[in-house]
Length: 209
Image (cartoon, rainbow, N blue to C red; front, side, top):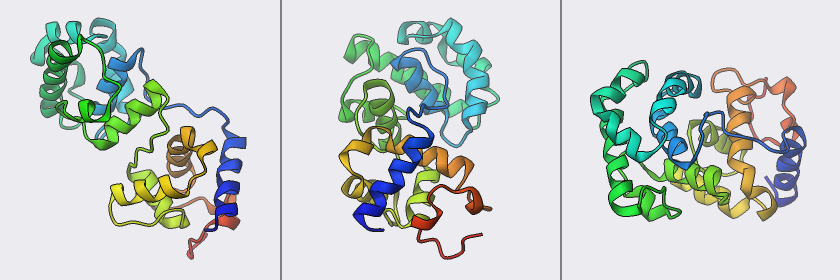
């Protein structure tokens, strides 16, 4: 895909959804961080169902720590890997209090030093909570980037680097949300909805439906 085509690609997605938002429900940077940690190998819908009640009683590291690991499990049992996730959320809450005065750090290295937080999670938090032009490559973005020819790569980090190189600066703030939404609702894994796709003519996918 050429630079003019890439610019057109994002211009069309932006025209459809000028201000894309995460589908995770959160109240502050801490609850966003927890929601993203819980969303690993789970759906946003499933996470939102669990956190609707959880965030009423635990919307800060202090309140989460007071809830405790077993107390947290009672709220998130419907989410996959809830035992490990509960352990990580309690541990990261403790570290936020001990190292960051109970605040979510605006720093990639500090975020990735927290239990259960990898590069993708850090990118989501930096982008959504703090407005950084980061690109969090999940399965949807990985698929869309490779399928369309935007940025091909065999690993999420390779795709992330490729997208950072080719996406014009004016689109980077919301790029990862546009790509996630496009992958989730149009460029789906098993049956891409090519006939309704806004960027069909720009896409390199040979098996268009």
